[in-house]
Image (tube, rainbow, N blue to C red):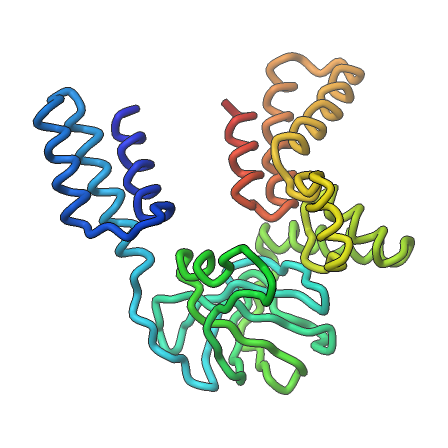
Amino acid sequence: MLQALLGLMGGIAGVEFLTLPMAFWVWLLAWGILALAIPRLWVVALFSVIGWARYATWSDLPRETPPPRAYLRAIGVQEPTRNGVRVLCQFVDPPLRAYALVYFRDSVSNPPDYGDAFVLTARWYRPRNWVGSRFDWARYLERRRVHHIATVYNDRQIERVEWGGGRWQRWFSSARQALRTRLKQRLSREDSALVEGMLVGATGDFPRELREAFHRSGIGHLLATSGLHVGVVLQMLFWVLIALRVPFGWRIGLMLVGAWCYALLAGLRPSIVRAGLMATA
């Protein structure tokens, strides 16, 4: 099992992180030679090839252009941006295999959230990199099958077809929005963005100058939810449960529930999922 996992990770990393492009047959030949030279590594070689082929197929999708009017379903919760929110969506009609990232400006009164189905009228464009940024945002999105982006400026552009309320994902999304609203009411824009970023890693509406100052000073990691945040949450919960004299078994169970509730509240980003898995282990 360990060899299979290492092979899958190696195959995915080969597609995602190799600086120089490499044809699939070269990867297959290299692992074939390694498996013949060291027969005990045949499981690693096999699953590395499987991981490469599967991930390459996942990311290499036909890039049809969606029509100006499309039927979408929100498959992600609302994420704050500097001037509104954004939601990850899938195409229902036309049934494209790629995902869409839809930005809703503050002028939209009630943006869709997880589970909502709606008809969108907008102009689509491909992911593109920010001017002056060294991070390849376009490649990051396209590797995750997000090939289309649209912006909604007013309520006339959307027509809600199905309401997705009542799902447990919506509860965590509502809790995040309530936290954001309360912070904005009581703090300045910079302070509320800072506190929200340090609590749940929501830095979408972070002022650009403040974000750059954090990164230049080397403390940008404080705004990314990770093991530090999960550790603090579990430590606080641990002392509360100790004070309440909760038995050991129940204490461990409640701490695991608390870790994953916090991960859901923080949006299940890769860093927070990794921290939740390690805390569970």
